[in-house]
Every structure is written in C-alpha cells, then in structure tokens.
Length: 62
Ligand SMILES: [Zn+2]
Image (cartoon, rainbow, N blue to C red; front, top):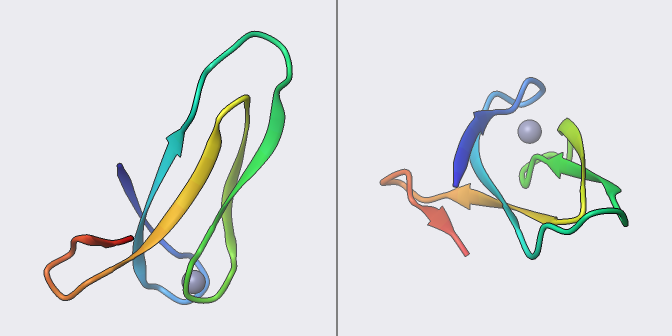
C-alpha cells in the first residue's frame, strides 16, 4: 500500500496494485483520486489497481 497526495484536491489517499504479474497482456492502469477522480499517474501493468480514502487515523477505508 502506497500513499499519495492528490495534486488537484490536496487530499491524501492510498493505492495498491494487486493481482498476478504475468508477461504480456499489459494494460494502462489509472491511479485515480477517490475524492475528486483526478488521475495521479498511470502504469503499464498486468495487475489491477485500487485506491482508498483514508480515515481519521490515516488507515485505508476498504
Ligand atoms: Zn483529489
């Protein structure tokens, strides 16, 4: 789990890549802010990505 601060709304959120890494079949995955939808960055990967809002203690809300 990584954390990033949205460049648009300034809120911090968490994201993680999950699923199997395999050769070929890569797709562009978008890491999007769960608050405003701004894309932080993209990555070419065979995995999936999920992003999570953080609770008051800074823990991801699943
Ligand atoms: Zn945002």
